[in-house]
Structures are given as C-alpha cells and as structure tokens.
Length: 207
Ligand SMILES: [Zn+2]
Image (cartoon, rainbow, N blue to C red):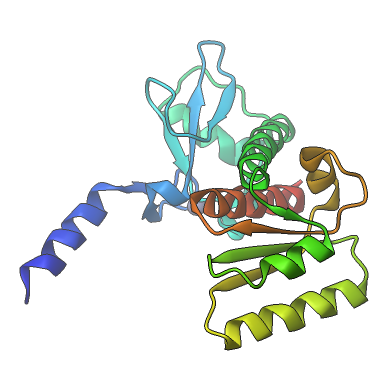
C-alpha cells in the first residue's frame, strides 16, 4: 500500500458531509449547504461561505423527490426555530442556482464565440472548448455541431458538447435574443455552470 493513496483517502473523508435527508455521505463540494436565519427561514448557501452552522443536502434526484414540509422539518434537530416550507425553499433554490449559473455563463461569454459562424471558426483553435447549443435550436444546427465536434475530436482536440441548454438563460446573459450556439473556453466556470444548471433541472422536477 503506498502512502499517497492513504493520504488521499484521509483527505477525502475530511471533505465529506452527511445529507440531512438520506444520511449518506458525499463530497461536500458536490452538496448544497443550507443555513437557517434567526427567524427560522432556510436559505441555500451555494458558495458554502455563510457563517454559523450549516446542514447539507446531497441534491441527488431521489433525495430532492423526498423533499416535503415534513422531511424538511428534520432540520429542527440542529435548528430549533424552523419554518419548513417546501415550495418556498424550492423557490429560493431556483433563484440562487439561476444567479450562479448566470454568473458563470456571463464570465464564460466574455471570450466566447457567439453564433454558428464564429463557433465553426473557433473549432480550428487548439484550446479546449465547450460548445453549448440551446433547446430552441433547430435539428440542422444540432446535427452540424455534432458533426463538427466529432471531427474536432478525431483531430485530437479536446471538446465537449451540450445540447438542450436553456435558450432563455443564454439570451438573457448574452443579451442576444436569437442566439442558439456558443463556444466557450473549457475552464472552472464550465464545471460551475454544469452543476447549477443540473441543480436547476432537478429543482424543476421536484417542484
Ligand atoms: Zn441525500
């Protein structure tokens, strides 16, 4: 057994938290932290930065589906003053995740290629790319992007493709109504955008 593996596994345990609903342990970074104010209102602490005690939710689909006023009330163990209201909590999740997703997207768009021609041109560059196609784009555009991405991959250039991205969010953040495809540099903001977009979808499903 080599020392490295040991150190890694110890480090991992330190960053794990228990979901207050399913009681399973997960990496804290992949979980949603919840805080409760003095009025008993529950708030999502998406950046894990709010002071004081927090509780964690794993955000897996099964766990979100289990969310109701009664299961939320389990937080009373740690927060005696608590207003458990599923609809309100999901509204707050939605607002917080939208804000984070929009912020990440807005940073990504600073250096992005916007629109089909610019995206096709950007495919020639070497830097790792994420191509985002909206859910309002036509099949012809989707097909074209799938082909272009496959070709780029065969050339040994790193590229990822998202189809069915929220068109309204892209229009809002890019301030362009008719945009259906963008290519962004692959960086940390991509992971954040992915996490918050996924959580937004899950919240919609749970609502
Ligand atoms: Zn859970």
